[in-house]
Image (cartoon, rainbow, N blue to C red; front, side):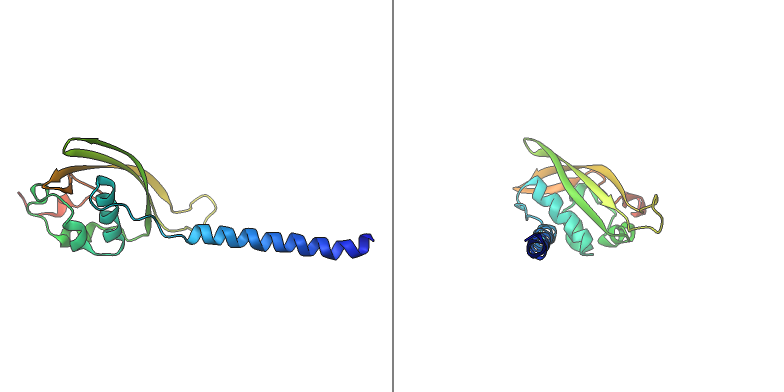
Length: 152
């Protein structure tokens, strides 16, 4: 009886592995949740997505004009990361017309060695101001490009 049960057991175990693998693949393939663009978090998400998509004018349009005087979308493009990156939303603190959004950015490409993966992660704080119902990024956000701009 154990000989007949053995192939059946292997079949059940194999099926379970296939199902678990499929569930993991589905979970990893999910698209990120699109945040409301009218929120500070949504503005930061759209900014980072535009940089990822190499839509530097779109990203530049989400920056507050008081902080980008003398700068262009080309300055942002020149400082943009060449390696892939991902971002994870952290805390948001909103007080009136100002907001701070913490984001962890993971940047890099896999490296050749077991100890040098090529990946690095760091926290960025995006400061935003609400201008006439639209959140705009102020200060000097990642990727840092203001040093490329014409003198103000």
